[in-house]
Length: 76
Image (cartoon, rainbow, N blue to C red; front, side, top):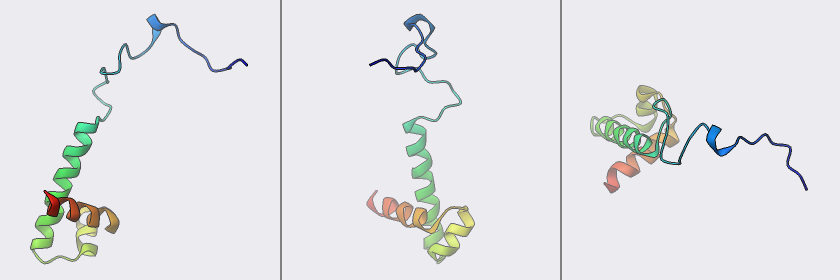
């Protein structure tokens, strides 16, 4: 069975190895840092007495994201 997907020779591959990543692409580390930052901001707003709905509106994220961020902040 043949595959019709175009395949580049190894020398022409855009990413020479798995560790290389263009600067504009997000990595797992940046995602976790952003998530940690979001958790901290959500937790700070909750300490000020804001509801999850108000936090979601202030941070422009969904309420479920606020819930997860608050849980993450409590665990750390």
